[in-house]
Length: 545
Image: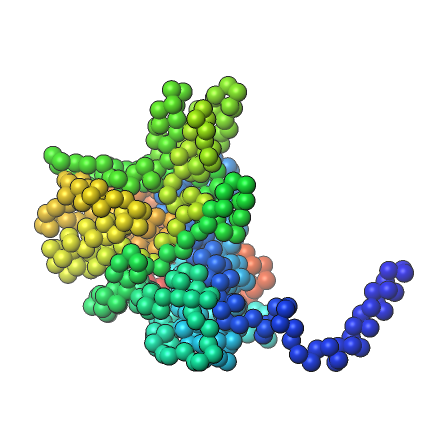
C-alpha cells in the first residue's frame, strides 16, 4: 500500500510542475517535434530496408528461390507450401506501418520548416515505395486513413487506388528534389544512408520506381509500354546510379544485428537453396541457351553455398526439389560435431546459407561458404540498373525489337555481375559464350525473365514478375512447359488442398496481416468479404486479373 501512495504523490507533484517545466521542448530528448529531418532520415531508411527486404525474403520462399528445413507448422515452411497466413506475413506490415510510415510525415514537417526540399522529396519516395510494394503483395491496405490519430480502425484502400497515389507522390518527389534548398536546410548527405546525399541517384530511383510500378500493368488494356521505357531512360543507367544498401559486418565479436544484412538475419540457419534456382543458374531448363562454347555462370559459387567433404574438397549444396515428395519430410536440420568431424544428419548435403565457421582456421572444416546475399555485410540491391535493363529487354521483345531486346538482356546480366564485383574479363567471356543467347531470333521471353529472376534474387519484384507472367502455366492455369515462361516452376508437393484445391490454383496475394484481423476486421471485411477465408490468397491483385 505504501508503494501505491508514493507513486500517486509523485504523479501529483510532476503534474503540478508541468506548467513550469514544459514551456519548451528539451532538445536532448526525442518526441514528435524535436528531431530534425536529417536526424529522422537514417532510421526511416533502415526501417524501410527491413520492410522491403523482409518482404523479399518471404517472396523468395513463395517464388522457390529458397527452401527451408522441414517444420510442420513453421512460418517459413508454410511459405514454401504457398501458405501465407496472419503470422508469417505479419512482419513487413509491422515494419512498414509501425516502424517506418508513421515517421515520414513528421520528417517532412521538420523539413518544411527549413525548406529542406531534398528531404521532402526523399520522404515522398519512401512513402511511395513502401505503400506501392505492400499494395502489390497484400492487394489492399490502409492508405488514406493510416496515420489519422483520430482513427483507430482505418479503412482499407484497393491496390489500384494506391498505385495512383504512389505515382503522384513520385512526381511530387521529383519536383521537390529539383528545388534549391533553403539557406539553413541540412545537406541531404547528413541523413542519407542509402545514396549518401546524391540527389541524382534519388531522382533516378523515383523514375525507376515509376517504371517498376507501371510495368505491373503490362497485361491490362491501355498499358503504355512507351511510358515505362521513358521512365527507365531516366532511371539508373550505371552501377553507381543504383540504390544499394550497404550493410555492416562488425565481426564475430561485435554482432550488431541492427547493422547486419537483412537476408543474413532472415534466412538464419534454416534456409536452403532450391533445385529450381540451381537449374536456372546452370541453364538446366527447357529452351535454355546452349552450344559448343558453354561456360559456367561466374555467379554460381557466389549464390550457391558449398561444404567441404571429409577430404576437404568443397562440394556445392544439393538443391531442394520443391515438386518432389521429399519436401514433405525434409530436409532436416543438422549440426556438426568437430570432435568426430561428422554431421548429425545425411541432409547436411543441403547446405546452410550462412558462412560457417565465420573465420575458419587452417584445420577447420568448411561447413558452408555462405552466399553473396546472406553475408553479414552484404549489399541490398533495392533498385538497380540491372532491373532497368531487364524491363527494356521484356518490352523490346514484346514489341518485336529482337536486336534491342538481346542487347538489353545481355546488359542486364552484365550489370548484375558487376554489382557482385565479378571481373569484367570474366563477364565478357561468359556473355560471349553459348551459355548466353547470341541470336536475336532465338531469344525467348523465358531467357529474359529467368535471368531477371536471378538478378532480382530475394526481391519482392521477383514474385510480381512470377504472377504477372503466370508462373509456368497456360491461360487455363495448368502447368505447361511448352508455353509457360518460368520453365520447371511447378506446384510444391506439400501445397495444402485447403488453400489450393485445384491444380490450376497459384498464389496471387498475401493473406491479411494478423494485426488487422485481430483489431480491424470490420474494415477488412468491408474491403473484401473473403479476406478471412483460405481462398483469399487465390484472388489476383488488380493488375494480375
